[in-house]
Length: 475
Ligand code: SF4
Image 1 (cartoon, protein in one colour):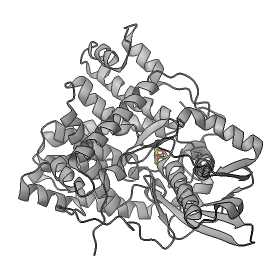
Image 2 (cartoon, helix red, strand yellow; image 1 turned 135 degrees about the vertical axis):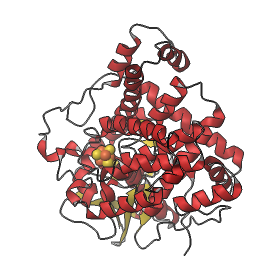
Image 3 (cartoon, rainbow, N blue to C red; image 1 turned 135 degrees about the horizontal axis):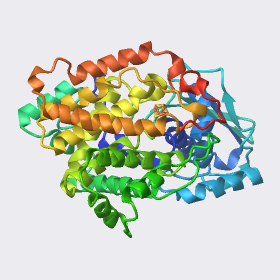
C-alpha cells in the first residue's frame, strides 16, 4: 500500500481562527469549488450559489464561523493572505448588499441567511464534517460538489482519496513511530533531521527552514497580540479576554516597547515555579483568545489547539535560553512529525475523536519537540509524545455554544503544562523500559475515538455544552 505523505506544512499552517476543521477546511473547500467553476469557464454562467452544511458543521458551524469562512472563500479571499481586520467589514458589506463576488470577479445575488443551509439532522457517511456547494447556472443546469473537512484544515472531495495528488517519494517513508525510530537508529539522525531530509522531497532545505521561521514569527506575533488585546470575545458567551490582564499583573508595571524587550521584561521576573506556570498559561490563553476572535494563528495541528505549541516553545525560549533559529527549526520539525503520525494512525479531527485529537495531539507534539531541544534521545522524544497523549485519552469535545472558547481556551494551558511535564518525565526515564509505546497509544486513541459517543465529538450535544446556558459566562 502507498504510504501517506504529509509535509510539515500540512500540519503547521498559517490561517485564521477559530477552527481548522470548521473554518479553515470549509474555506479551502469553497476556494476549490470556485476554482473548479473558473477552470470550467462557468463563472459567467452562475446565477446563484448555495452551501449545504451537514453533521458537525451544521451543529457547531455558527459558533465556529463556518458560514463566514465559506462566504469569504466564495468571495475570493484566502485564509493565509487576508488582512484579518477586513473580515468584519467585508462580511457586513456582503450581508447588507445581498451580493457576493465570485472569486472576486463577478457579482451575483447572495443571501447570507438563506443561501447557507444548516442541515442539523443530516450527516454524510464518510465524515461528520461535510458540505456541499451548488452552483445554479443560467442554462438551468446545476453543478454540485461535496467536500469533507477531515481535520487540521485538510479537505477531501467526495470520491477522492485523502492523499490524492499528494504522493511523493520520501527518502525516509514513515507511517508510524516505530518506522521513524527505525530510520533514526539506522542513520543516527535526530527526529528533526529525518524530517528535514524528507522535506527536501517537496522543496530545497533552505526554503523549508525559511518557511518554518515564518511560522515561528507568526506564532510570536499572535502570542504578543493576544497578550496585549483586551475586551470580550465575539459569539455571545461574554467571555472576557484574560491574557492581557494576566500579562499586566505578572509584569507589575515593567516597561517595554516591543516583542524583544517584552521577553526581557518577563525574564527579569525570575524563575519561580508559580511565575513560570502563570506565564505558560498566559501564552496559551493569548493565542487561543486571538483564535476565538478570528485572528491570525498557526494551525498546530488544529486551531482549537493552536496555543499549546507556541506556549511550550515560549516556555523554552524565555525560561531556558534565547532560542536559536536552529532550535526553532528542530522544534517545529519534530512537533510536525508527531502530528502526522497521529493523523496517519488515528485522527486530528475532533469530529472523529473528540478533544484528545486536538489538545491531546498538540500536547504530544509539543512534548516531543521540547524533549529533542532539551537534548533527549530519539527514544525519549517518542516517549515524551506517548506520555503526553496517554493522559489525554478519552478527552471529549463539548464546546459551549459551538464556540471555540469554553473549554477550548483554557484547555490549551492544560495541554501545554502536560507537554512540559511529559517531556521532563521522559528525560528522566529509561525509554527502553517503557511499557507503552507511542504506536500503542496512537492505536488506543483511535479505538477510544471509535467508542466515543458522537455527543462528545464537536457536536455540542453533550458535556459542558448542554450544562451551561449560553447566556452565562463560565470563566
Ligand atoms: S473542546 Fe477541544 S476539540 Fe473541541 S473545539 Fe474545543 S479545543 Fe477543539
